[in-house]
Image 1: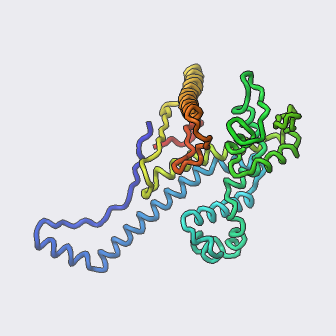
Image 2 (image 1 turned 60 degrees about the vertical axis):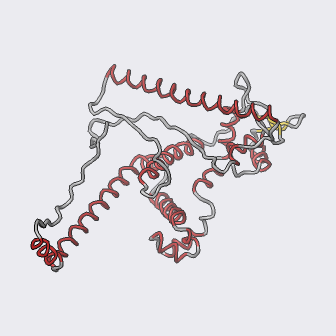
Image 3 (image 1 turned 90 degrees about the horizontal axis):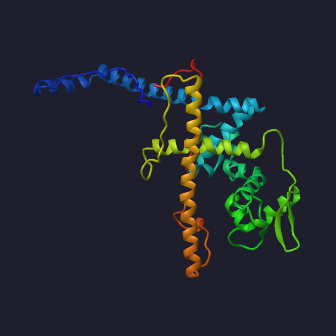
Length: 330
């Protein structure tokens, strides 16, 4: 398992205070310009060191993300614009006053005023909401095929009235802020949904493909990285409310190869899938029991996301590997 890296800082001035006379001498020396100068240099050196660590860490974090972007045709200006908008959105989250004016946004984010003026107009729609709208169709189809299918995996024909296992239920789960009527019209427009004679929505067999790399694949990648980074950010936040989120990893200090590498890769795949399946089965059983009790009691159907303490939660499991010439973690 990884240990904690040690950061070497310059030594602070040391004074001995073993007697009242020594204490008076210490106070006098601390008040001297030379002593204050030494502490200023120490504090500045420590601050610069931590800043350098943060920047090196963020650069390391961005390497695979930038590599993916370049591989799929994005360039410096595209990424620079995305970074500017991300900085503005985070400034808005941390300092709500940032949206009051372009000047305040520029001050709180460090963006040039002309860029802050342009970006401020786009902050009404955050990155997550924009991504959601752009990948709406793919998410609805994938959710329909996975969670709204019959015993043999055939997608169900969904009623258009509210309730469980209906089209509004599908939209609520996979396109939260989109009105069901709007989502239905969009699916009909691209030809992947028909309305049956009985007035139900039916997923057609016509494929929905938008290119070599499907938008939902990009969305999934962004959420996997986003969710992991959110967990780390929450755990490192000294002002967080509540205990840290669970986050663990293991890796081999000695490189693996041959049958050992293949065997460990297969074991990780099987055990990881089994672990996620156990969690999913437990959760489904709990949800079924809750819905059963509601039906028996005659309680009106109420989506879980209407509860004040409702949260989306999950567990991610992933495999990673590095070449032997890649710098080893401390």
